[in-house]
Length: 241
Ligand code: PXP
Image (cartoon, protein in one colour):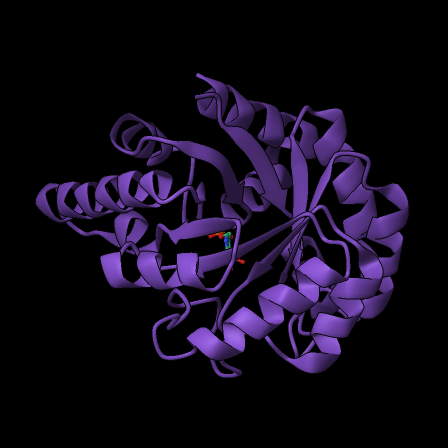
């Protein structure tokens, strides 16, 4: 299966906000991402608005011509904005104020009823695809299916952070098993978190059925050195093989 590359531009906003400036602009970054051949643009409107702002969302809606993936928590205010924005894909993620970045998948088993309601709300608003960000754990995949979500995004953070070859191989095996299970249940498989230019090859070799990957930090960090278009093209080459 060919995998689509969606680029997360949150950290363009992080850089801008570090100086309370107006540059760099995430919407301009999104245009460069698309010009370089990415299949879509991802952003996370956090409850604390620490990077992407409501204004960014409106501007992104104006400029994004490929696929828009709107990451969000179940916060009703943010769910409302997502419904109004009408992205092609909404990805539900857990959110904790003190975290530096999303740390775990959703606890779908414990929050199944709530997630089922929010998935229904997003679908009823006309959003074609809703994904749940989950750890590669069987019971979470099964619970995701029961919420009515169309897709799961497998959390690749443990794989990316693994300190030894053995640990990484174990994480890759967990991801592969989870992808097989989700695919067999009829869920579309996405993946992301911590994927980069070095670990992508091992991820790709191990994990089947991945329709989309969402990659942010590695691309934005490289873009500072080589430019956004070049950084996206390099990642695209890895993803498309
Ligand atoms: N997918 C989800 C659900 C995320 O929360 C993030 C981080 O914002 C990513 C993918 C991208 O992770 P990274 O920035 O490490 O590539």
